[in-house]
Image 1 (cartoon, rainbow, N blue to C red):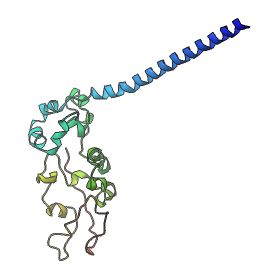
Image 2 (cartoon, rainbow, N blue to C red; image 1 turned 180 degrees about the vertical axis):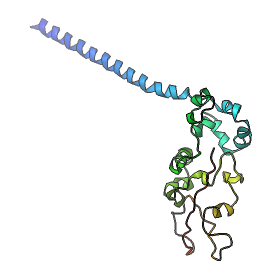
Image 3 (tube, rainbow, N blue to C red; image 1 turned 120 degrees about the vertical axis):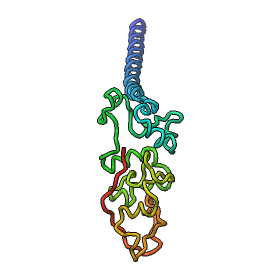
Image 4 (tube, rainbow, N blue to C red; image 1 turned 45 degrees about the vertical axis):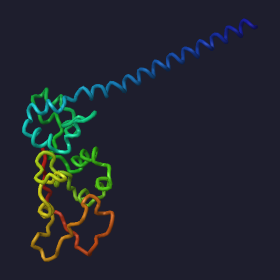
Length: 208
């Protein structure tokens, strides 16, 4: 009877050890599978210097001298932080379909990509519920990373001319437009004065 107990106890112990080994092997395989996509994605980044090889003028005049150049620091991907991994684009001889271009993209997709980095702070945090977003006005309707005419905030035009480019009220209108607003978070409070709502016309884009 005692021998039988020892035998079954030994069998039970072996079974437990076998289950532990199988579980560890399965866990290691899962972790390895999860790690591979990250490694593969990382290998698809070619670096901003590679981009410079074909886009010399944009790189020097519209990137290194702008705030976005800091995306090259630490573990940033520079140009590819906005345009995505460029390996396939380079291997395809500059195939534009192999990299993200902001040109002709829906406003929601454009702003969504910008907000991946710019979602923090009181201004940008309210963009999703702003009148600009509701009216499908994307970030590049007012800002341009590479071709900004107004260095501060990378605006495509000086204010208020920039605003009048979309808003139906003109600079010569008898009714003044309130220009001290914050367009990204204008829903946070009521207007200071009873100014009629300004409708939007077609949205211009400044993409690359």
